[in-house]
Length: 178
Image (cartoon, rainbow, N blue to C red):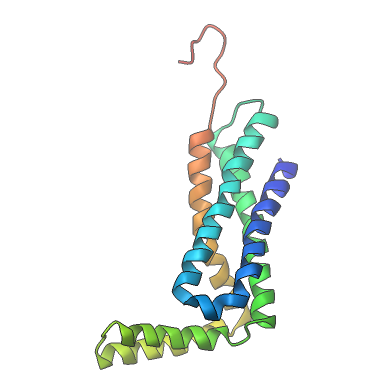
């Protein structure tokens, strides 16, 4: 299991990390909305490695047999490795290329509220939330946790789906699969 988890976790992590490295230099040109779409699309694509990793484990180590629990264990470990790569890459890029990300994103939150036609009270509430976001985001432990929680739910959903879809009991001879 260790080899499968490492291989597919690192492939998944490398996909998300490489895409992040390729797109971060252009974040000011593409904007936050398009950046989020591109980012989450990449995260979903890299999470597909969970499915392929669980399937690979079932076919190679499991001899064609896989319980939901074992599939979940393989998938969640792949997810954790991938997410660690994602978070590590983001932290490096954030502190080297984008040290002002918190301020820029907070300003974007306020601009988006104003552009939506929100009343002054709603804009003021958004400004307060933006200030709180920036304070939290500047704290390294909270920053890491927020970044991890950005990607983990997707990996968890793909893990649950993969374990459910790929679970397979080998039928005994004469049992006809019942």
